[in-house]
Length: 394
Image 1 (tube, helix red, strand yellow):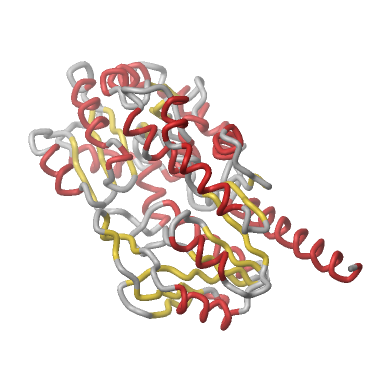
Image 2 (cartoon, helix red, strand yellow):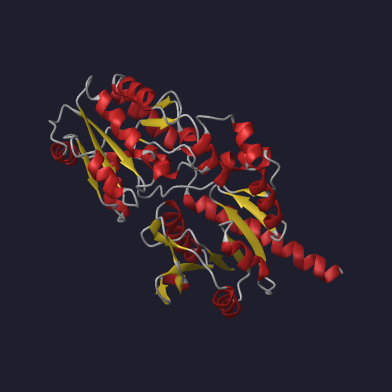
C-alpha cells in the first residue's frame, strides 16, 4: 500500500506530528508499505528515507507567526505530485488549504482525513475560556464546525488519533469513522535508562545538588504550551522544596521564555533533542514530567515520560490528562499556575519510589506505535476492499 500524506503540520523542526510521521514511515516500510509525505518547504526538494519513504517538500509561503511551518497555496504542484505517485490512500490533516487541495484532486485514491487536533479546543476555548462558558464559545464559533462538516463530506473516511479527540468532535456533531490511538516507541523509552550520574549533571546545570528534585518539560515554545505558567509554578513550588526545571524545545516564543527565566537560577532551557536514545536517557533520569498544554488531543510526550518511569504533573484537560492516573500523577486546574504549584509540591512530597513503580506498571498498557500502524493499515485496506467489491457488483 502506498500512502501519501499531504501535511501542512509537518516540519523538520516540528513537534509531535513530525515525530509521529518519521516513525510511521519507518514502520510502514518494515511492513512492506510506502509512506510519502508532501509538506510545505522553503524550496522544492526531496528527503529520501529508507524503504522508499520520503518527504517531498513543495516551496510554499511560511506562516508569519511561526517560522517552523508553511502553508500550501497553489494546488497544481500538489495535484501533479499525487498524479505522479498514484497513491492507494491520500491523507489530509489540516482544515486549511490542504483540505481543498486533496478533495479537489481528480485521482481515485481513498481519501482519508486524519485528525491530529481540534482547533475549537486549541484556540477559541483557550482564548475565551476565562470569560465565557464552553457552550457559549461553541455557539459563537459554530461556523467553524459547519465549515468542518462540509469539508469532511468530501472524504471517504475520518480518523482520529485517540478517544479524547473522537469524543470532542462527535459531541459537537462532527463525523468520525474510526479511532486509531497513537502509540509510543517502546523500544526506546525505558526506566532502565535512568542514570544517577546524568541526573546529577542535569541538576548541576540547574545550580542544585543531588538531593534536589528535577522536573523536565518537553515541547514547542508556543503560547498554547503555557510554559510561562509552568515556569512560574515551579518558582512558587521552589519556595517549599529545592526544584530544578529543564525545558527542551524551540519555537516562536523562545526569546520571550529566555527573558522570562532570566532571574530563575534553577530553570534551564535547551534545544530539542531529536536522537531518540539520548532523549530517552534524559527523560528517564529526571524525577518527574511536567506539562502545561491542555488542548492537545493525545498525550504523546506524556506517554513517553510515563514509559520512562516518570511520575506526571498535568493539567486536568486535554490528551495529557487522559494519560494521568492518581497512582502516579497529580492534576491541576488547566491554566492555573497557583494550582500547578500545589500539584508540584504534592507530587514531590509523595513516596518517590512508589510513584515510579506505579508509572512503570502503567506504561505496559500504553499502545505501541507498531500496533497503531497495523490498525491504521487494516482500516484503510478494509475500505479499499469494500470499494472494489462494490465496483465489481455494480
